[in-house]
Image (tube, rainbow, N blue to C red):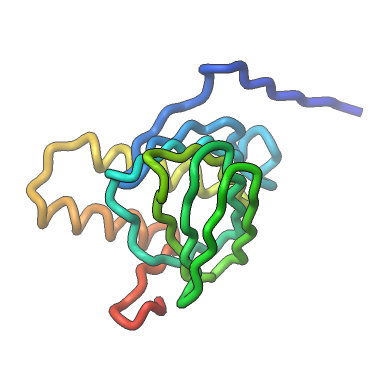
Length: 155
């Protein structure tokens, strides 16, 4: 019988930047046999809202500090510290920070979300013209099967 344990100390973890938040990978899929991943998401009210989108993996948010609005389809759920929401794979969703800033845990099924965030971070660190940036970001979403919502709010 083998045992594998991963400990992530305070301040550890891979730090990534997405257009709408700073993300720390606390537990990557390589530490869970690909079953799930855990992230610390730190976002401010001044960050742009991410577009409505649907991922091919389930996820949940657990708010640690602040308040966020999680939009799923046509329904919004306001969450405060200590509250959690679970979102099924394929559900159109996004979040908006309602307080000055918010910190929450993001837990997602599988082992793709960290790679997705890593690719978003890499695109954001490059020097690209606005049109090129949009093309590269859309390439990342397509590569991971993330569907961006159309004008109707559905992918």
